[in-house]
Length: 622
Image (cartoon, rainbow, N blue to C red; front, side, top):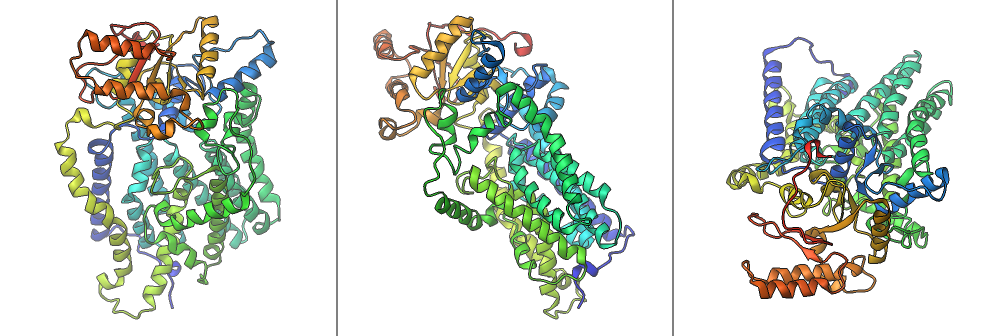
């Protein structure tokens, strides 16, 4: 019986094909307009915003640096500076080299931001920051390019029908579009992974035909090297590729050595830069394992700790937690794969004896790369799909195109065995129609009501409420001078929208005082604090516990609650009582609100000295 890999589609552009491509283009334009227009509320994740401000620093000529300061990363860089320049050397508090993120994403985004420097200043009536559009738009370009590459690859492996349906399912995958709104490099990663696997399949084809594979292996290595420069966690995927290459390609071991040489050469540049800046080849990223499966505390608590009094390795119950986390990924696999019904069928396709050897062999390298990706995500942490849809460590989405293609091919085999009257087009393609309908139905059902709701909302309210309201963050940041530093629980947002250096709220007030004293010595004043609902809306029953990560900041949370009890037009007596309450044990005592906001006092902003008026930012945001 014929299998999908034996089908050859006609090459001529008939009328039906032209209509299908025109409809696909219209859907592409419509979905792009929806996710970058009506539905867009600004960058949606903390790490995406943090990488965006790194990109702007690069575009501004400051190199790969950050103004969102993680205390433990600052201490790491300071230690390296003192080792190189002597104990008396001083490290700038306002900006440090970024050694946490892989650099390729911010570097590419910096090219886009550099062409629109006039948009860096948030306008008075802007709800969404223009560079947010630029970065999300760039991600969407990579998503659409990935769909095109996927069509070519899946069509090459199977046929254009399966390639076209795979592309359509990717186009309607809400998860992929949501990732394009985050500022994370996942769409760039998908683009690079799609290209890398395309050349890998070419190498497998060449091997099956008895031809040389060196060129295709070299190109595969180049794209996987760039993939690692987009997210260091993808090196786990590379392990699976190396093992497959070592046992599959002839001469044995040579192709694996070529891959390791190319990827190692590309990533070594990044590792050397990290070593020079921080004293460790992985930079601040080395601490992520302490906050993952092998750690004793959360990553957030670890990076806020100036002296690393929390965290460290803890392998007690390591095997049990590993199995539990891996099984949790399997349970949520359908969600991690974008809710595409055909993608999980890839695992059943492993049981089918495809006639063409290259198709049968290629699925094993996909499985191997995915297996090691699961190990990496297990060790370094991956939030359940219900809690965080767009987790920055989600590598499952890279396998959506390939797994979908194989799943559709396997579905075609089963459909053909039903002996249905395939002379009817609807019956012949019934399995594709069902796969598409089941996959896109949840998003389609939400789309109509969502459009109605979005049309009713005032454009000024279309923000990432409650944590990221650009106008409010900018308004508070404008109350301090450009060279002054703000402490915050959302330093990435203060650095990005407020264009001010911001230090992540340290673990304790003692550590904050250490930083404040260092700032005074260097003439770099740390005189303000800005807290978001992420902390302010925390349950006081948890904050009041001595072991809580925000225990030392409970009085600010209490103060914010007291502010909410006052009437809008409080008199001098109420103001005096508030001032007395604020003076009692708070490092920053003078609170300042922003009048006329549709969101009210959403944030808590306090300073050392009273500030009655906003200071305008200097041209260029410096």
